[in-house]
Image (cartoon, rainbow, N blue to C red; front, side, top):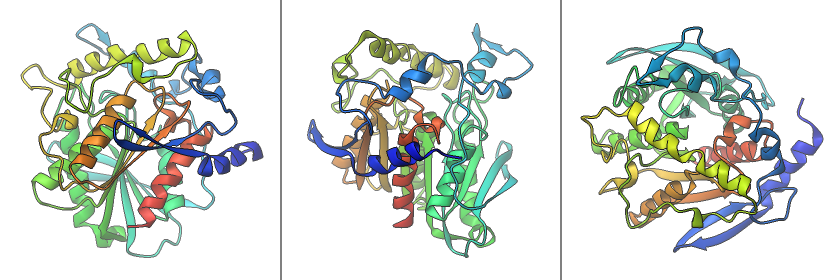
Length: 362
């Protein structure tokens, strides 16, 4: 049961916004619902920031070390137990798609008694390309299904380093093709297929959109990128140069929280991308793509104190310059991976509300 105060905060967030212009780009800022101070983390983030992840149930019994990196430990630290915030019955099906590299497990979420020709959102979980799973994002996916009255397909794609680029991307694109080809059986409208993902999942989502455009398959009509990784390369582009000056901070703890994640990008690149593959490949670092035109309508979600915020918003600017219909929403006081706290952070539910509104408008 979700408490009344939480529901009130979700309501406040819907309207507690500012529209600001940063370097020529309009960004909608969602303010902390119960705090009116700049340069500060949401009080709920402070409560969790030093706590141990609660998803130890996902930990593998077998320790896996790769190039001196304890992959098992990294995977067990990802995700967070969250809450089911659905208001109606959502049916869950465990399905298997046969892809180029073997079977791909997916979960299908459908509101009970949903009529035919519903929209479909394909969701790709985060986890730095090496971790995360469909269990962690189950409640957000069920909430999206409920709020958007849509079919949600969550992909359990192959993870690096066992399966390095492009295997995970191929899995995701194979599922999109399967959804498109089986639209009648899945009771969805094939012209209302969209894609979303958080963090590394956001990277895979936009890479799928680029592939869809490049192959002229035109299956994806909308993409919602939740604090996406959009470059693993250290090359700078006109729109993007990372700096701590991009953040307004009130104390050193916030700085430490942001900076502690920076080394993670280099490690992820090592684990996800083979040495023979250049990280400036547009399907790895879409921010560096020479052509972002003709991509679908896009929503980019960023978190104020996320180390990925600067590149995510730079990507939004580049999309706008390429005449792609793009909206950027920044959540004040949030740090990375806040969607994992569905039912705990009101911002997570508000983010799902924003995506659901877009799905309904297709």
